[in-house]
Image 1 (cartoon, one colour):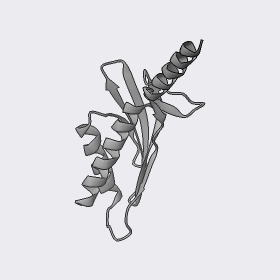
Image 2 (cartoon, rainbow, N blue to C red; image 1 turned 60 degrees about the horizontal axis):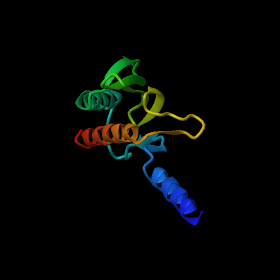
Image 3 (cartoon, rainbow, N blue to C red; image 1 turned 135 degrees about the vertical axis):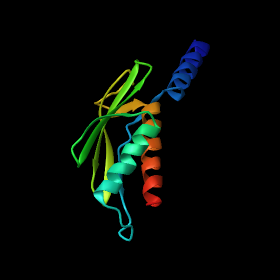
Image 4 (cartoon, rainbow, N blue to C red; image 1 turned 180 degrees about the vertical axis):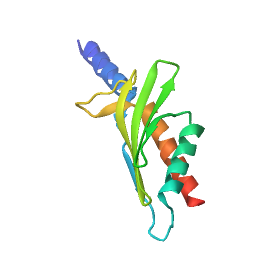
Length: 129
């Protein structure tokens, strides 16, 4: 009986440690007030970063960009990027095949990596403007 209990505990710990779910990443970046960037520069940096990482832009109204990423037609993420000359934010809109749990606010960790790469690239581009 003791061995069965230990095996069950070990199995539970092993499964918990292998989880691919992570808290969903939402980023908001505000530029340094000394950095002079206009809205067109911000828009351009975001567009270039989306292209670099394989995101497809669905719409851009001058304040909000809707984009999606499609990984092998099995994993699809849709994001909303709100932006101005002073800041930008990236938020999850919807997803398919990424285990999104709205109650726990979790998603597959790859989504967070995709968003973090995008966020870092936008910031890098803005730093050179």
